[in-house]
Length: 252
Image (cartoon, rainbow, N blue to C red; front, side, top):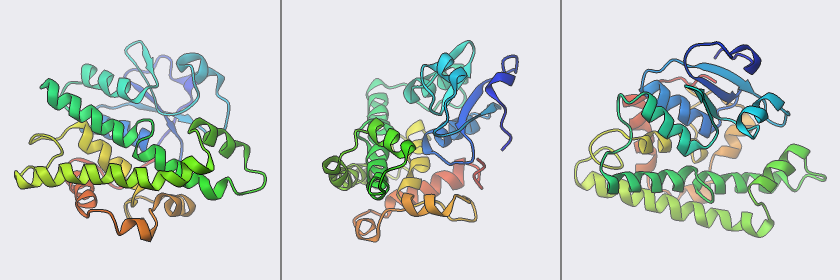
């Protein structure tokens, strides 16, 4: 993927998307996937973990990716990014028009990608060995603080992960009994894409289509003792969404 510098894209047409260069971070990959489904061309802007970016901070109030810059707005909150894309590029619609269904879609997206959700707790689990390095790297210390890390919280994270995954599997199994291939209704939503992308933190896609750093692959893969509790329908759904709607191999 070609990346531009933030200082060079001021007059560039179309949306700009700040992404962590060279890393398949699921939050950024989700926004990329949504734009891909909507056939929206964007300019990728490089962000580097652990490095200060004063220009990005001045624009968005923070220095993390992803950040969407489009139609005069600069948005760092994931839900607000999804809403902005849906508003600015409404075809195909990825959020239900029915209010109850929409509330359920947001609830599950939050289970996956929001505070104390699946990805949040997977990150806490990944911090455990890194925080035992004496002294921990400054970047790891900073990230751990962002996620409210403590030994007690991190040790409870696997339980929270399994609860969330069980609830998602129950939803998919209920849909399957009604011959529905998606998490809600009978068409693709942002929730299906969210799970497909964030499933990398359970079991990454094969190396042939996702050439991620080996250390990252190992930390993203759930341990065998926990994998045994996972309903296969979660992986099957990820694979179906990529086969039917998304582009492989991943490019970051």
